[in-house]
Length: 164
Image (tube, rainbow, N blue to C red; front, side, top):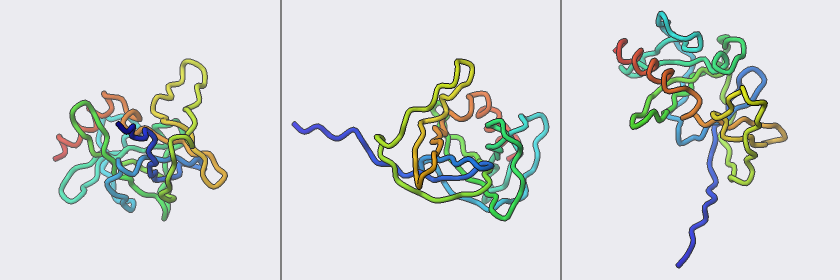
């Protein structure tokens, strides 16, 4: 009887928000788009910038800077939308994550990922899978399935359904 190794090297897409580097599992990334016109949807949270038309599908776009308490993302030549698949119960929600720029894809083994820092008891860090180090800098590795609450994903899904 052989025991399969539990450790599995994963690939991560890195992107910048302000001067901070974040990463998401490439298995969750559908595609990366250049910045395009985003249609604002009334009465949605500030970090929900609006919706885009992606080949006939309505995709909600979230400003990751605003979601993480940073100043809003400003459009530059490098600003992009990372289209990701987020698990929400039994469903998969497709949404766009607005980022300042996309950096690269790299591999990390589980042993190279430190647990997410616990900063007091009031700050929720459940959406941080851990902290990795690459090329001498720390990278916050996101658990994209936990980055948005169920209510936020329901709002995003509802906005996409209404706009369709």
